[in-house]
Image 1 (tube, rainbow, N blue to C red):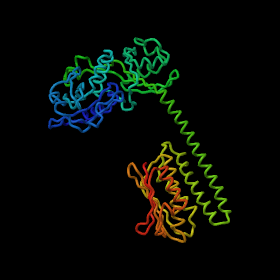
Image 2: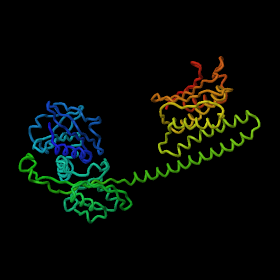
Image 3: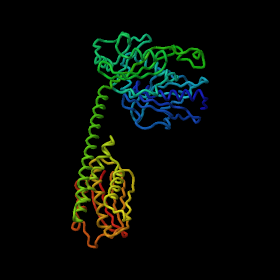
Image 4: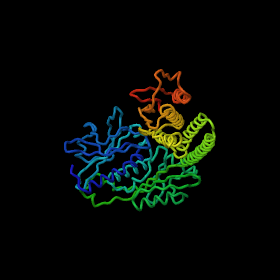
Length: 478
C-alpha cells in the first residue's frame, strides 16, 4: 500500500509506543500491514515485560497464516470490542484488532493484541474502570496521540497500576499498588481520594501528563522507599464516533482527556542491592590492587637478591621466581581494573611477554617474542593458572631452546574452540633430545605446567617437535 509522509510518521509514532502498551496490556503486540498480493506481514512487534510473552521468536518480517490474518478485516471497521480466538502454536489465544487509519480514511495497518486466554480472562475480571481506561489508552496509541513513551523504562510484573480521572481522583488501584502505598504509610483504601492529598509526586506528574499530553517518568525517594513513577495520559473520542471512519464527521472531533494511568515501580531493594554490590566490588578492587602491590614488593626484593647472588644458577632461579611472581601480579592488576570478574587472556599474555622480554633476555640477544590469537575471556582462577603456564613455557623456551643462541623466535598462540581453549608456545631453538619423554625428562618448569594443567585447568599438556620447531600445547575447557 502506498503511504504518504503523514502515514509513515503515524506508523513510526505507533511503533515507538508499542512497548509500554504491551506491558500495561500484559499482551504481545504485532503491527501488521497488508501487501498488494493480499498477504499480511508483521513489521513491528512488542513483547510484554509484565507477563510471559506469547511469541518468543522475532515475528518482524514474518507472514501471518491466512486463517489468522482474516483478510476481510481490511474491508470493514474492526470493532475494538471484538475478541476472537485463534490458535498460535496450538495455544488458544485471545486476539483483538485495532485499525490504524491513514490520512485518506483507509486502514494502512492494524494493531494485533494477542494474549493467552487465561490472561485475557483475568483481565475481564478486573475493574471495569480499568478495562475502560486500558481500551481508551490502546485506541489512543493506535491514533498516534501518545508522546514520549519511548523514553519510559519497562513496566514489570510486580509494578502497581493506578487510574485517575481528569481531576486526579483515584478511580482504580491494583492490589500491588495498594501494597506499595501501604509501605508508604497509607493504610486505608485510597479509592476516591485525590492525588493532592498524598505526599507523593503522583499529583505533579499526573497533572503534567494530562495537560501536556505526554508520558512522564520520575524517580523519587519517598518515606524511605525509592519509587519510579510513570504517568500516561488517557484520551478518547466519544464512543459513538469509534464506529465511524476517520474520513467522516469524526475527523472534526478531537480526543478529550479521560485521566491518566499511573505506573509505580518500587526500586528500593534493587538499588540497595546495587549499592551493596558496588561497595563490595570497590572493596574487591582495592584488595586486588594491594595484592598486586605486595607481589611487586616481593618481586623487587627477590630481584635485589638475584643481583647479589654469586652463583649464576642461583641468579637464574631467582630471576625465574621474579617472573612467576609478576605473572600473578598481572592477573591481580587486571582484576583491580574491571567489574566483569573475567579477564582477557590475550591481554595477560601480552603483559607477560613484555615482562619476560625485559627480565630474561639480554639486550644483545635478538630473540623475538610474539603473541597471536583472539580475545578469550576466562574466570580469574583459570586466568591465573594460564598466566603461570605461559610464563613457565616461555621461560623454558628461553632457557633451553635458546641456550647459547643470539637469534630466535618464540611465539604464544591462543586458540578459541568454543567451549575449549588452547595455548600453544613454540620456538625455533635447538629442539628436544631425540629420547625426550615428558613423564621422565621434564624439568621443574615443565612439571609445574603439567601439574597445573591436569589438576587445576582439567586439561591436557603435550610437547613435540614438528617441522623443526618445539611446540608445547595446552588444551582446557573454558
